[in-house]
Image 1 (cartoon, rainbow, N blue to C red):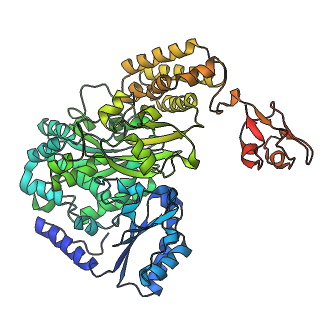
Image 2: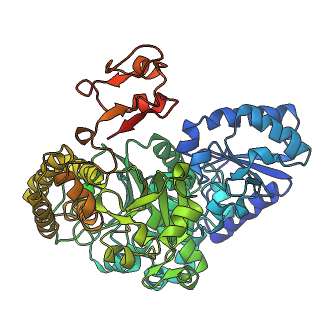
Length: 621
């Protein structure tokens, strides 16, 4: 929080903060942005930041260089990352030793250290400027407009980038109806997965009678491999606060809750500090910006149940009840939190709202395709070369995300599938790489947009085992409230477990499909209704793998342990004994310089021997 926090009472006060910040930062020759997202924190970015600050002091750069610890810059695979502005030079895999050289040669000497910049493996050349790197080149950042670009802890810097000007415009120009009409015109749809029009939802909240109403931010991001909401909360918490502020003003709510999972300690800490700072500046609390409107926010910590991402289960959890869905209708906008009208939006949706109000609906709607307007944030994970957070315009080709932005598959292996939408989504194949990434196109393929998880898989992935993994996840996370989800997903999982263990039958495939479709039609909430999606899409697009498992009792990807055997090729084995020494169960025997043998009864198929063999002598059959 700023040492001096003036209470802002008007648009003019807001403008004064913006002007003062811009004037203060004009004097610096360089701004050095050190990524402080969770990915880079785990890669020891704190050591890089500490070394930079030490050099900053020792080399007398206080009046020339500004240091910023930001949220996630995006390219998590190459962290810790550092950006030097105004040039926009992107440094990768930084260490304390490297940052000292950057200070000496770049900040002081004026020479970019090319060896520390992004290496284009296709050309073998280093690309120093962030704007030219394929990962960043095609991105359009709206929800992520400030992430990786500003000090997450500086409300003044957020204001300098038109932060809280959206709220000022709402109370001074648009009025409550004007806000939801602007959102309707923009085409913004819920980014949490359902894709419901945000303006229509807010209009419903506005029209619903009630003395007490609530705005709730759903930050319970539980999809495996997804971290979009976490990145926004860590890197730009004020955008979410302002989005909730605008929502509260529009529907007539004076209270908001952010429901965030306990596994996000950095996000919780930064959001908490941002809320306190906003209160100190008078941007939360009573009579905000002299508008007569009062609004405040509380954080509620979730215990990690995936089902609490479902909006009514989330409301139950906030109320201190068991986190299980409620029957609808009534819908939350009619009877939600504590029985009052409630509007629920996810983090990314709320982060979009302030900039739409400032720049206008037409600007936002100029991006996207069809009924899918604007941009979407995705978390690239799995067998992708460049994992990280990306924001792309709706309508981009799936192949462009995977191969241009993500750099393709690790180690040059062939692409096999991409899972969109998390456990509720579907697996798409190489035949879908030309598919437009938008709500309607993905739905037509049997997948969903979801909240933005995107897991890429290579040729070594067994799609049957992938379906088993996701079914195991949703079955474990089911609240058990309704029979189709509680019992149905359990039965599906049992069949899939039989198949991957080599005990499946051909009749199991039709049984799986019939049960999955029944669950989709009869489950109570979105978790159960979408739980069969990974199974149904893998059955549709990878049926040959299922047939190989049940007919030939083989796993084409050599993943299912009960269907594979490890053998040593006696012609290639040199008898170095390394595999025998590394085997955790002593399943490999043989004399020095003589071919070794694997005891298949003892072997656990852990893969340790393959990874340690220098001669490629161990095979999977």
